[in-house]
Image (cartoon, rainbow, N blue to C red; front, top):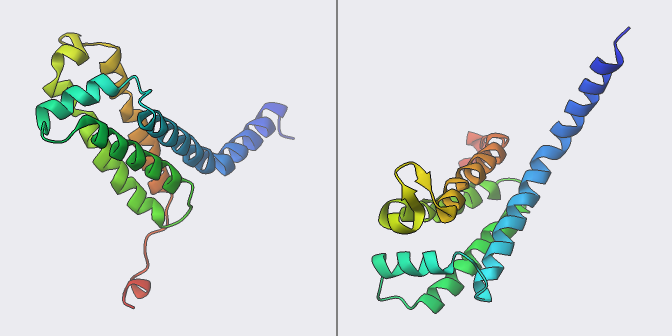
Length: 154
């Protein structure tokens, strides 16, 4: 006869397996949609960092217009995470594009992101924690079924 601990463990793991991907999708939706919406209303605490990076990389683009575009782009990524299936491939590519720019301040704006070598500011920590978002999105993609060749020939 199985122990109560083994039985509980089996049920707990089974539950987590059923809810992990839907929960991950919801959490990514929530983070991207919410943070994107904050940008639309000029309430994002990341605005000074984004403005400084934009000024260094593309000073010819007005911050207000760029921030609205960025907010809508992030909100779109969030909504796309709610759609199950093959759209996750596209969503992941959009996330990678967005996330690749979020790491730029670590190199281009060291005064805002590092107190000293290896000691990030709050902004730097916020950026480094984006690795968790990437890992979560990779987990979703890892659970997709590969395309079948016969479906691609059409």
